[in-house]
Image (tube, rainbow, N blue to C red; front, side, top):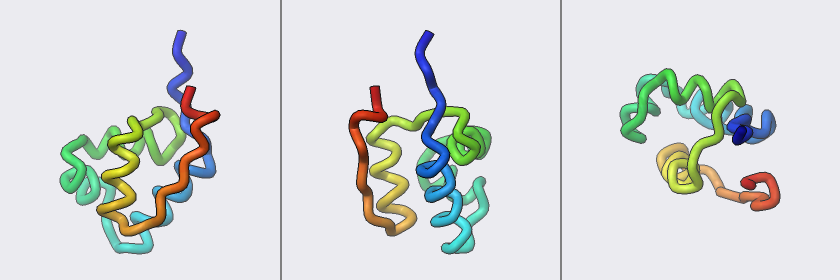
Length: 73
């Protein structure tokens, strides 16, 4: 079984960046072409987004993207 959990530090960073920009989960979801349920799963560390989606999040939320690839197995 594949572990889909997401590092809580990354999940919190995404949530904080979204909130800092005054966006609701549904607004971020629309910008990323995903559901607000999926954003919630990511922010709660219950699902791991693809690298492509993390890259889009960084762009839409205007934050620097640093990835530890050891955690992306």
